Length: 439
Image: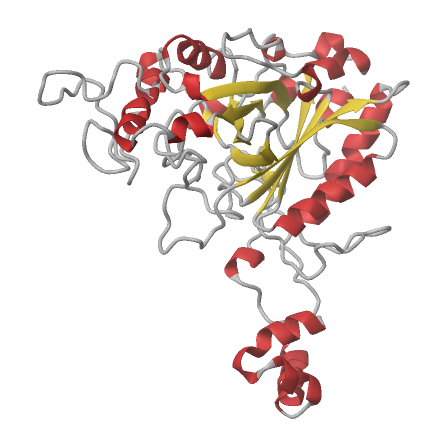
């Protein structure tokens, strides 16, 4: 785990990804409603609109000219396919998220899983386009735009034997090794199938979750669900890196899509190997960890001590080796006394690729707060999600190093863990996982 990871991609949501790929159709705009008419009135006043007069003129203009435009946040749509990858990996961080693991119910077969993934993929494509769904749609988010909605699907190691696919399981999906900081709850770990939902509106995210759960029918049951949040786009005067619940700027050393080795580190290449078969081409492996922050203990530290634990200034995220929030860390820098400017057990030193043989991963978490525990402390922390082409070259070596020498670890508790193979998006018209389930 790392608590100082930049999550915002440099790729604009909805832009054509490098390498081409068939673009998704444009998102459908929401229909005109009385609520949106009233929201457009502004200084004219809702009462005047209802009574007539100015309302009649505005209403006639709206009906002639079409729906009032949504705000930029609500109108932003993200295609279901990000080139050869699923969306929700390099997509900029969203304000709301749901992470849900499912287990197959008794008697389900490979054919049942294929049918479920076909239904889920078709439904997700409609949801991200903001299309009206057929059937029993509760219209929870009926007045909203797409709000950067993404839906991402993954397969757990336990799925393969249950679906008669044991010989197709990637070696890279082997169980993660134990770590000394683990206090894992098996009931909230692992799972046959995994869905990640992200959106910039809470109702849009919940609506997608509800629809996908109903679409699943009796094929699966929920194993665990975790709900998270991030800073809302536009909440700051200018774009800035987000902060985690410890108050630390969380994100200046993440791999970026513009890095020359980004795809090699994050996505599975074509060709197929025993560690990652060909059906995983364009995919990635997601490690999911529920990491509780011991905030009461953390808050008792002085700001100066917190900065030494992390290795960055709390005010702006600049490394203690000097510079600004975007300045690369200088691990060789010494302070006035000759001591390392970045302490030997500082989080950013222990987690740095230079300290881990170049190991790197794309970290894209959500914060969570699940109330107050019996001892009065907040049950809050990080829903840590990281992406890599192979966990043995990404998460595992970094976490081993953190487990042995990270000064931040005594303020964290790893309470659940899971690993999922997230296939590529496939060709246009394919459902997610089709190359595995129909080969």
